Every structure is written in structure tokens, then in C-alpha cells.
Figure 1 (spheres, helix red, strand yellow):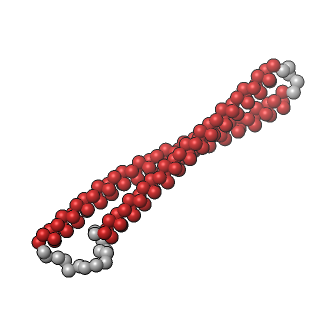
Figure 2 (tube, one colour):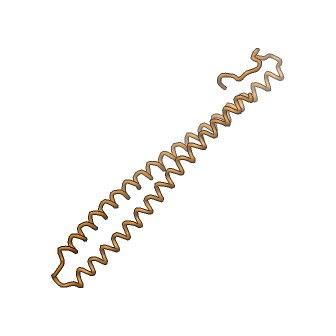
Figure 3 (cartoon, rainbow, N blue to C red):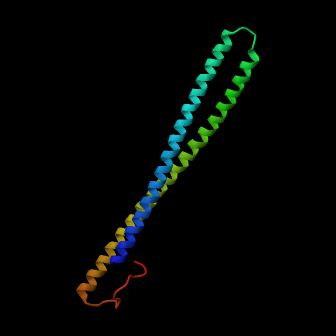
Length: 142
């Protein structure tokens, strides 16, 4: 019985550790999406400033500004793609986390049921005097 309890504790710890890792992954992805969104907004502000400069200047030197705007636009498109990718990854991680929470709940319920069966069987064995003949060591499975 003691070995079974220890096994159950270890299993519970493993499930809890897996859930924590998933939560940490989700937090990391959310922080990355947030950082990339801030960078994107910063780039958009720079583009707006460049466009304002372009509008205030006369026709001379516009090819350099056009090149800068084109580069900025492609960088923004790249960042938007990264943000979408990170958001999709975050959603997948959240779905995985919810699945793991459901599995954890089911396993905890099953574990509690097995513990009750074990206690009942031990009580019957102690009260009835009829044992299984098993003495010492750990049972292979509960």
C-alpha cells in the first residue's frame, strides 16, 4: 500500500510538472507575441514619420525615401507574419494545456477511485482474516 501511494505521488508530481511546463511555454509565447507587437507598432510609427517627412519635402530625393518606405513595409509584413505564427502557436499550446488539464482531472478521479478500492479491500482483508498470501515488497500494479 505504501508503494502504491508513493507511485501515485510520483505520477501526480509528473502530471503537475508537465502542466507547469505547458503553462511556462504558453507564457513565453504570449510574451514573445507582445514584444513583437510592440516592435511592429514602433516600425509603423517610424513609417508614419518617414511619410510625414516625404510629404513635407519637395520632389527632390524621393527615391531614397521610397526605398526606406519599401524596406519598412516589408519588415512590417514580416513582423505581422511572425505575430500571426506566434498567436497560432499560443492557441495550440492553450488547447494542449486544456487537454492535459482534462486528462489530469480524469487520472486524479481514477486514482481516488483506486485508493478507495484498495482501502475497502484492506478493510475486508483485515476484518475477514482471509489474506492473499502476499507479504512484503511492492505490488506490481494497483
